[in-house]
Image (cartoon, rainbow, N blue to C red; front, side):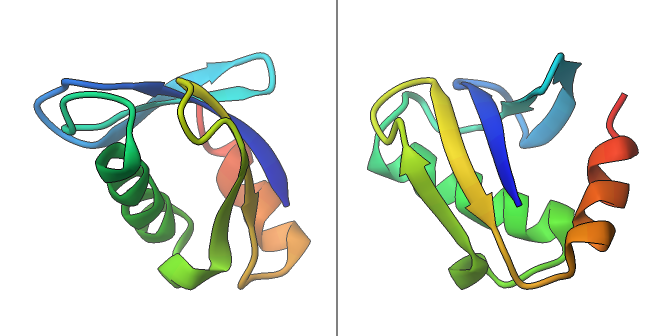
Length: 87
């Protein structure tokens, strides 16, 4: 499943804030959008979608706040159910 993610750095904890249209907004505790923030984002998304971190790949936007992310490791229906649970 391919999703768009808007990263909000410098937050006290990692959490999914919600969705704006098809973009998932995620707070990360990393200070800026860089490789460290990408690692934190991948780890958190793996926990959130209950997949292995190796199943998540940033396709586009590695140095930007808005990223295109490919999530694998589970069926498309299971991932869609998790997406639908985001307010």
